[in-house]
Amino acid sequence: MTIPPAAWTPNGPNLGLFYDANGNITSPGNVTVVSAANFAPAQVVVGNTSTLIAALRIGRASITVENNGATAVYLGNATVSVTTGVLLPGVLGAAITLATSAAVYGVVASGNQTISEYELY
Image (tube, rainbow, N blue to C red; front, side, top):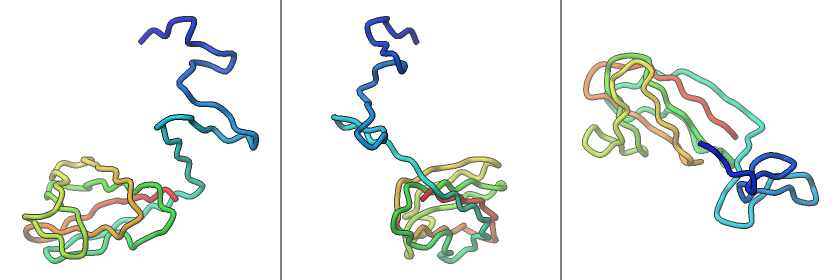
């Protein structure tokens, strides 16, 4: 992508972001800048009943869930099922990032599947 010279500022491309009086990056429009001070990784074995992957964490910016194997995992709330959950494909390395502070649960159709998750908060 080429950015026209008029879009450049001394600090780089003009994307509608600027620094406030405290030195924080901010935006006058609908762009949200998210920065997290903490990174919390973990591994969880998800079973064929609703399994807690990460508890509610007020202030969490996002959680990424990555599949460590070949079994599909379905993500949702405490009542998640294979018919109501969001599919995390059964592909090694498949991942989804959710911008939520809510508790995240998973379930598999049968057996178990290890997933990795990390929270930014």
